[in-house]
Every structure is written in C-alpha cells, then in structure tokens.
Length: 198
Ligand code: TMP
Image (cartoon, protein in one colour):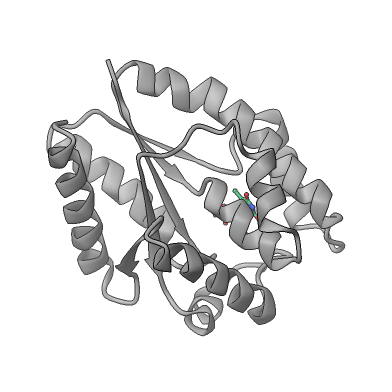
C-alpha cells in the first residue's frame, strides 16, 4: 500500500497547526485514512529542541539545524514511514521547509540545510498557509519563543515565498476566516488525492 505524505508550513501564529488538525479530522470524516503528526516531534530530540526554543539564549544556528534534521530522521522512521506503509495520508505540521525558512533566516546556507536533510523522505504535497508576519505576531498571546520576533518572522516569510514562487509550496490564503481557510485547504488536498487516485 502506498500512503500520501503532506506537509503544512507557515509562520508561528499562522493557524497552521489548528488547520492541519482540522484538515486531518475532515479527511477522516470523508472516509480517508488520515493521521496528524508534527515537528518538532514527540521523540527524544524533538522534545529537547522544543525545550531549547523557550530558553533565553538561542542555540548556535548550526546546532539548531542539525537537531531539527536529527529529529526529522527519527520522526520519519518512527511515525511517518510506518503510517505511509499502512496506506495512510500523513499530515505533518512542519517539515523540511521549516528548517530552510527558519534556520535559513538565521544566515545558514540553504544548500547546506538541504544537504543535511537529503535523506528525509520527500513530501507528495507541501502547502504554505500564508499570513503576513505583522499579523501573526499580533495574534500570538502566549509566551513567545526565540523565533517569534518581527525581524525573524519577516525573513522566514521571505524564504517561504521563494519556495512558493518556485512552485514547491502551494499557497493558501491564511488571512481568511478559520472555516474558509479549512475549506480552501481541504479542496486543495482532495484535488491532489483525486489526481493521484487515492
Ligand atoms: P511550532 O510552533 O509549529 O510547534 O514550531 C516550533 C518552532 O520551531 C517554530 O518557531 C519553528 C521552529 N522550527 C525551526 O526553526 N526549524 C524546523 O525545522 C522546525 C520543524 C521548526
């Protein structure tokens, strides 16, 4: 059986986690066998990375990039591949484009980030939930992580847009209502699944 691997990308506060979860539910309701997962993952390295994100001092960026890449290998091996092998549709909240956008925004060479992620399974479909950096920062009411400042988010947004322009990331307007965003996301995914005869 062949599953389908979909990743959802976006800025912090873009609503992508909520949308990825709602999308998974909506697909299941429609009879698809979909599962939700996320990065940083629930594995050992993922938990460590998440903890570091809320510490005062940011890790050296190369260390950050390597940790995210290591977490990804664990995530793919333990969660993504087993679900795909069972023929499931795997919806991942963040994946390699997050490393390109976030660690790239901190000055790392994008080609090097691609190299350390070269063994990560390629997603079948990658979607960017598009909300402007100024809007997402206003939305974030909780304690902000080391990534959640305007300068970082502006740069992260710029890099994501590069991949949108290249056609690698499919853009969904995330500034609309929660329901409208979900409907647009669902329509995009179902269209892809039908094209791929799922
Ligand atoms: P989250 O808020 O979507 O759970 O993600 C946590 C933070 O981790 C978010 O600020 C983005 C950051 N991140 C990276 O910097 N690189 C990565 O490769 C991933 C997966 C997340």
